[in-house]
Length: 168
Image 1 (cartoon, rainbow, N blue to C red):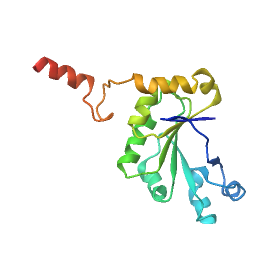
Image 2 (cartoon, rainbow, N blue to C red):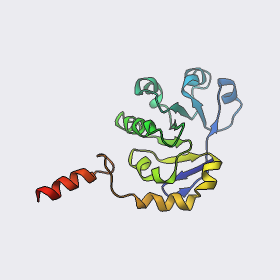
Image 3 (tube, rainbow, N blue to C red):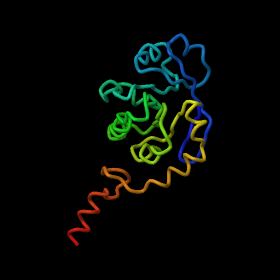
């Protein structure tokens, strides 16, 4: 996996685990599925951890762990499934201050929107990272400056700008 933040590629400090037993055998912070979080936290209450959540998870499902989690990794099953972007915005509105990671086969064209929605980093499968290297992600981050939806960085949307121009 390749990890990309706004400043470029970065090492991953987290190890992915699927069970409480695997978490006990791992040094350092872990990313665990939401479904095993209660079991892992019961065995290792002092563990630094991140949660791996599906892009259709609800805030109510994630909320019991947000105060203790350092990271939430939102899983994207496909680049065409944007529900993870909405979940990121909801997590930030719910007060999550930790690292938000988008994980899955995203494309560089989505980087600016992912950052605007509250993601801090993108975790890509190697096949996607090979097709679109880090340099392409860095260039794409600054290319997209106009948005059809509101709420991306505080600027007015394309439609709001068009309406204002007509009224002028």
